Amino acid sequence: MKKKRGIFGRFGFILAATGSAIGLGNLWKFPYITWHNNGGAFVLIYLASVIVIGWPIMMAEILIGRKTQKNPVPAFEELGSKKWSAVGWLGVTTGLVILGYYTVIAGWAITSFTKCLGWSFSGYVKPAAGAFDNFTGNGLLQLFLSFIFSVITALIIWRGVKKGIERTTKILMPILFGILIYLVIMVLSLPGIDETFKFLFTANFADLPSTAILESVGHAFFTLSLGMGAMITYGSYMSRKESIARNAALVVFLDTLIAIGACIIMFTIIFSVPAVRESVSADPIGMLFVTLPNLFYTQIPFGSTLAPIFFILVGFAALSSTISLLEVLVSFLVDKFKMGRHKATVVAAASAYAISIFAALSLGAIPFLSKLNIFGEGKDGVLSTLDHLASNWMLPVGGLFITIFVGWFLDKKICQDEVNLYKTDGSPKLSYKFFRFLIKFIAPLAILAVIIAVILGQDFS
Ligand code: PHE
Image 1 (cartoon, rainbow, N blue to C red):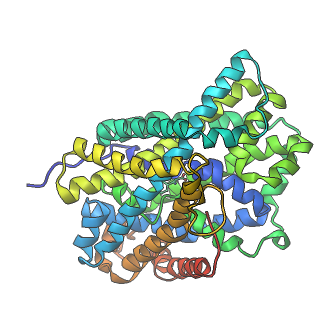
Image 2: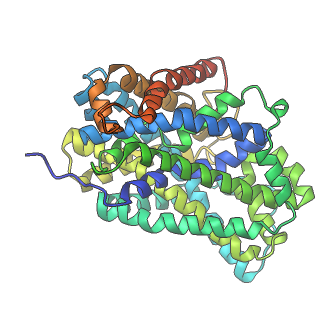
Image 3: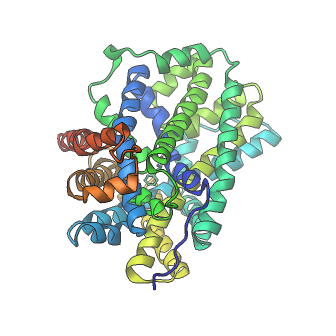
C-alpha cells in the first residue's frame, strides 16, 4: 500500500509556492540588479524572461511532481529512467548548496530587525564606518544567527506538509503582502516617487548593459525557485483538482509584483534623498541592509515605525523560501531512503548547517575561507562561491534538463492530461499549444544561451 502523503488544501499550494518564490531574491537581489542595469529596459526584459521561460518551466516542474507524487529523484526515475534521475540528484544537491548560504544572509534580517527595534525605542545612533564589515566578520555571531534561522526552518518542516508548511505560509504570506502594500502606500507621498516610476517603467534600451538579457534569465530561475525541484516537490502535494497553468501563472505574477514593489519602496526612499543616490551607486549590494536602515531613521516620515516592520518582511520572505529548500531535502530522504520525517528533518538541516558554517565564517572571520573564491574576485569567499555555483551553473543546468525532458522525452499524453487544457471537443486549447512551444523551443534555447554566456564568463550572482 502506498504511504499516505501530505496534500495541500485549498490555497495551500499557491501560498507555499509563492512563499518559496518570494525571498531574498525579490527584496535584496532584484532591486540591486535592476539598479545596476539602469532600470526600465531591464525590467521589461526581466518581465519577458519570467513569462516565456519562468512560466513554462514552473508548469513543467509542477506537472512532474503532481503526476508522480514524488520528490525529484524518484519522480524522474518513474517518468524517465534511472539516467534522468541525475537531474533530481542535481536538484537536491543544489538545494543543499543554496540553503547552506541562504540562512546566513537570512540571519542578517534578524539582527537588522532587533537593531531597528532598539533604535525605534531609544533613538537612532548612526553606525560607525565599517560597522557592517565588523558585523559580518564576527564569526560567532554569524554562526549563531544562521543557526537560529536553520532551527526555525527545521521546526516548521518537522511538523509536516499541512501542519508545518501550509499553516505557516498561510499566516506569513498575507502578513507579508500586507506589510508590503502598507510600505508602498507610505512611500507614495515621498518626493522621489516620480523619479522611481520613470526609472522603473520607461525603457531606454541605450542604457542597457550588454549582459542584461542573460542576467535577467539567470535571476528568473533563482527568484522563481526553478531548476532544482522545489516546484516538483510542492507540485507533488498539489491537489488534482487544481489547474497547473493557472497556479503557475499566479505564482509568477505574485513574485514579480513583490519584486517590483520592493523596488518602488527602496528606490523612492533613495531618490528622495539626493546625496544618497551616489553612495548607493557605489555600493548597491549593501542597499538592503546598510543604506535602507539609515534612511528610514534619518529621512522618512514614520521611518522608525516602518524600519522594524520592513525587516520582519525580509525575515518572513526568507523563511518561506528556506522552508521550501529544506522540504526538498527532507522529502528526498523520506522518499528515497524511507527515513521517518523527523529523522530526515534533523539529518537534512544538520547537513545544510554544516555548509553554513563555512559560509558564515567566510565573511571576514577566517581569512582562509574569505579568500576561497574559486570563481574569481569577491570578498565573501565561500559564500560568494556557493551563490555563484548555484545561480550560474546548477539552476540553469537543472532547468535546461527539465525543459528538455518535458518538451522532448516525456510522453505527450501524460503532459497533456496533467496540464489538462482541453477544449470541449477534446482538442488542446491555444494556451496549451503556447506552453508546448515555449517548453520545447524557446525556454531551452534561451537557457542554453545563458549557459554559454556563463562559460564565456558572465556572472549572475
Ligand atoms: N526564490 C527564492 C528567492 O527569491 C530562493 C530560492 C531558490 C528558494 C531556489 C528555493 C529554491 O529568494
